[in-house]
Length: 563
Length: 42
Image 1: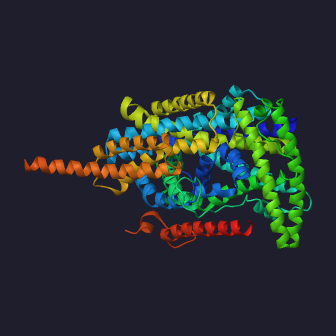
Image 2 (image 1 turned 180 degrees about the vertical axis):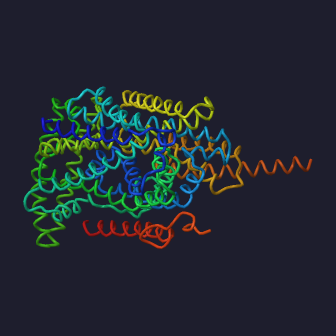
Image 3 (image 1 turned 135 degrees about the vertical axis):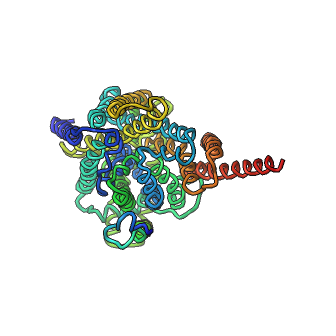
């Protein structure tokens, strides 16, 4: 990185931290520290929930995913707007009226302390682990590309945000989210524009999209229903709905964001606006990846984007042979893509079809070489999955000075936004659902605020500790989603029973949750279905087993009364 | 009591129900646009 990049990075991060501290200078009580004191207008709620969901992994993996797999990942978010509506109708009014700090508090009023504690633990453990992954994921990529020490990168990634999160609590987190989202979205837009500018002169945006489309990178919609296909309209609408409903409805990192809204209307409006803008935003992030793919039709891409992994095999004769073939295929493909673009311009259908077949064939050969190289990397014990390195490699190699620093800052900022929310939510749940409810029940307000500050620092350090021990997690974006899907369905099931099945009691719900969670883990271990469906299975299992247990209990009660 | 009377009116539209409808209509529009996008560029 150049000096200018370092300056841009330092200035951006200092601005965010300074702003967070500045906004949190007022005296605090537990409510303002954990929920922000219900002061946020809708647009701030909207940006805060978006910044919480969009981690660094979103901006690293997203374009990489489009580069390798096309745009179909956007279907993953189709259930989100539906979930926003359901949460606005049911969850928000109840949480606001009961004036709860955490979502799990409500479960004690509906069921009992045991169910509240179980769901709080089902939230705390996976959220802590996934926060560790969220720190590790961008750190390992930055440390690989820039040769930075992973320990210090993890500490910087998880530590900088702790300054304002410990001092300012929820309010500082929400206020910095606004600045973070503006910088992140502005930076990604700039990156997209620069990709198009770096293409050959005859390639404008439309021409680039036409070429990407002919190379099957813009297939966004797949109507085919297939339980084992990760991304299609149905898995997105149904599985995605359950995942997003449990994430936004029961995960404290999100509940804490919209509970900060100044009224039911403001919280609701913030979530509904998120339901409108989230899908287009994700689409544009993926589109950057598709544009980068076209860029690499004119500039030779490495066989593997992870240079550390590549260094393990670069002296092997097999790799050098693959590299030779790759250069030859690249030259032929570049020529064919240029001809295809000319045919598209002339609207010569016959020639377009012939050249499309040729380009696709060459691309398949190129993908085959990539897979063989990845196999070599795997055999040498390296990380063969390079999806997360694609976009950043492009940024570092081809974008101008200053912009590189800005995009690295974006990775830090995006990471800080989601991790700060996660750590704030871990603190809220730990202090409110466990510490204040079970350990120290009668203490002063300032005692709980101080405990919350210590808890924030400890959760931050524990998450950094997970990041230190996290290693190969495949696609980082998917790893986080899979971890969530393992627990979210069950927790959602408990809330669905609480809201809609008044006849199911506390005992039946508690045991149903345990049975459902066991079932979900078994389904995942046996690889029975794509991960999005685990959310549906967990939720439906809690409701079904709960109803069954309640029926059995009811019958036993009748028999006892008869006797 | 109606939702609007308890929680206030949403901006731009006359009721919360209309706003929910707008969010769902936007989702349908997005899916149709992406479908068109898939067909147009493949």
